[in-house]
Length: 294
Ligand code: CP
Image (cartoon, rainbow, N blue to C red; front, side, top):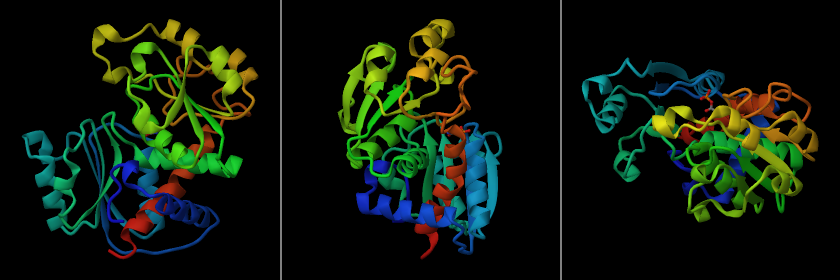
């Protein structure tokens, strides 16, 4: 395993190995690697960027950060040439967050540098998918038959596209609830078994709820729904929270009083801060697995 671009490339054995490493790092296992990691974030980020940075430093790796306006991509250099340049500069790995999808990925994989996807457009966010999976495994143990409900802006969600596939890999049942215009027509690659029309029926079904962010920045202006009506129909209100029989997650950042009511974001059934904490250990596991032999 040299790259992590998409969860679709992972086998269950590899995910299980990553989970074992995650647990070990969370329990205090110490490992030291050598080398330099470039963090290239062309979209904003708090938790992914800083937890990757922290994970690198916990493993003894040096980090070098560049944001959207700070690279020669601004001057028209291609992403391919950027990868070749970073490889020639001696970087072991490139952690990238970009608003586009690198296609075909195969063109980028043989430049002697590990590529780690920290979110590419609406395509994949593999480490967030792993965080959500591992957090659910910590809480529930076996995921077999667990009913996992994704709620909200499914269409724009790379978190959903990574997480749902991983939950299905572990024989969880995945359902979705969202505005009809924000639910993709073909959900079969992600193992979705149920599409719900209302919270009322979904709440009866779900053991674990994963709320998603309404991604306003990805809408064409005239298609942005009213936030008030979105919250009323699809938000996790206090009343719905009280009816949940299990926990809920959100990958963050939360649109408060749009995705989730301010009354319950950090309430007892919320795993949001646990997901954030698990971000560092999940990313340590990924970095260690990819770079230990590099
Ligand atoms: N979940 C997530 O990707 O959050 P950030 O955008 O803050 O990194």
